[in-house]
Length: 533
Image (cartoon, rainbow, N blue to C red):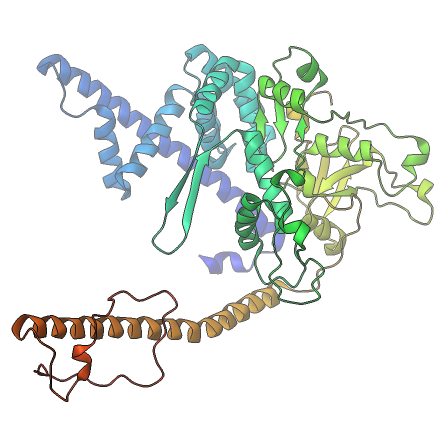
């Protein structure tokens, strides 16, 4: 099979990928239709059995799931999910199912639609959502997972806001935080909190994790985990570099600082009618996703400041490389994510890219710093566009970007904010630096680092094993000596006069060792086989 495509040129290979992707979607659609039809057959048979016997021992859904599990070698739980999804497409989302069967959408998108619309129970409302999403789904090519989630959530809230509000209210009543002790000296945190609180907590951990110097040996995940303890103790995260002249070294005032000392900023994007009026249009919580209008107004009432995203620029500002703060805010609110096809990195961590490059020598010649020429690109795709040379982009006045790939294919991406608001960090325009390392070199470096880490841990683990063995031997020896002392007292009642093993007359020894116990360097004397009395 691989030989049949190895001789094709890149354009033909991409065409094969696209065509097989459509065929795969169509096959999944046909499979789901067959599962739904089988379920209907089992439902009808069960109803006939109930009519004749008055009851059925196993319902139709369980029968269907059992057959599907056997046919596809699935676990019972996986088969249950598959039958449930097939039933949802058959009874709740038939128009979306038709698009899947025709290969005009993919299973990833359909799965998201099924899961994000399950809270709608009214048949008329789910039919409206089905029609609305089916009419728009053809324009979702190149959309990231998060953007599809946002679009579906916005459609659900617009169609059935009461159901979404009831679900959120029930979730708020169930909020909790718990700790589960593990058997390896660690603990697991779990719980459910409000979206705004979770976003602020995530930002706070990231902020604390960055308060170390570049020589800190910990990974970002490790620093975030350690930052939790620092957050609980009201101090900044201590750097682990071990250098005496560390620029991020903690001071006494840092250690004793109260928990409320650092401020965390969370951004909520919403229309003016939602914030100040009674509009039911949803908002967008940066780092989380779509939230309903009631949540937006609660956050706005508690906000320290409300800022307007203004895309208008003066002629003088258009000739500057860096956009104004208001323009930058407008671009990030409009795009919400990176504008490369399929990328969902949030706009707050993206660069602001000039679609037509800014002319530093003669700014008035082209590449102006205006909304029609700016978009958000994450650093990876900013580098790809700037240094690869095979990707080309052009931008329409409404923010839509057309990408042309190295093989000549065209992809369109529209601003994610336009789905929620029809009317519409690092340096904003920092030029990306080329990454001269190749993927093979990066992979080799990762492998070398992992092997180095294993070599360093091997003697540490061996020393730990030897210590544990020594502790076991010491506890065993103490138990033996204590047993001999007990036997001496039981059978003789007086101290032993034997010159051998005089330790038998010593007091009983504790049979638990302190945490800092270490074995003596001299090997312990061997114990006699017979009692010394």
